[in-house]
Length: 595
Image (cartoon, rainbow, N blue to C red):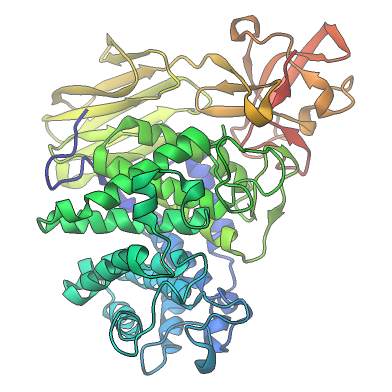
């Protein structure tokens, strides 16, 4: 494993232009572009800016979220229709900017105010800045950067500790965390301009967390006890957003030789994620209930489970820590999130999203514009940037497995990944090189895989969990094959799931679904498996017919099942993966009764 050296990240994201996705990842990515980003109404995105005040206090967040997802997607696909829409939206958004730089959705009399469910003005500006700065990063558009600077300059004049300035923590919902999540785009703006005023404002935000009477005490709390439930008001989405911004600020401070000043930011984020994984993470990779972190192990399967905004931000936090450290455990978490809770929240058609995604019952997909339906597409749009990453020593990491292609023409390299992962345990990597090239290839062996077999041009090595390094001179036509045995795994429930079990295969959490319910079963609650031992449960992957599928390569998982009232009568039980459970409006359940 390559650790982060002093002043450097362990690994770096790929440009979205460098990766083409296929298989399940590619299907969800394409559906996101075709059925969500392209058809979403421009009038809906811009109405709150054109006719202030907007329909709701945070209506302005949607345009920034849309731009972030749309620009990353266009950078990958080059779709001219999407690019034309992006250009229009940016142009029309900038046209609504007030002479003083204001680019929110409140009228003048209620700017930066807290009454009548307000307090989201800075939050809206945060997402506007994210959208404009992403657009500038991929197009070089000077007007977008100019508009972002004017909006940020107004914020700098408005908030701070000077005479007549407002307290950013006080003009915010959720104990200052909503407004102070502005930290992330302020870091981006400093990186884009080099203007120290923006870096100074970032320092002010972190100072205000701890010293403002209205601040969330993020660092003091997490560095003292590390319990996210006991930090501020436990609001998951906003807290993790602040931590993501804190990690970006840490990188800047480290690059400028002030890494010791940012160590608290890094350690707080690590402790927060460690606590989430240990005490607040669903088996499917989601987190939070009713949008808040709850007491340890309080993870009910029904109700307001894992707000999609929280799922997306947990993925971002995990990825930032992976970039900084290169530790495989972070990518293992990211894989669990993507293939389970993220894809479960996104309808396979890509046009709808769940606000909450329970582990039992029905999924409530929504096509309207809401915070979660705007956040979800951002996570899907990020996929091409972290399936592969590149290290400072020229090494290439393969982080997520799935049919895909990495193109690095500046290195004369094309790496093609052939696989039906996450359904199939075989991954083949084919090298296409203009000339021989020596560099390390680092393959992630997932934490669920006891031992992988890796074949290099037919010669085998054995690899355990973590990143397995193959350092050699690669030649055109070289082939690497990975075999990662996907044994059925049985997880016995604890706490809210005492007396239940869950079935997993590879990275996937499996589920019962009424769509495949046997006739002899009266309800999902009456069905289980005949044994708690995985080796006593046969498992077969079954392709589905054209009339049944939610996407072209969908499969089902067959094992033995029983009805609890007739434990000796076994039948073929067909399961699906959590990502597709309930997608046809049927009830489903992840946790089954123990036999």
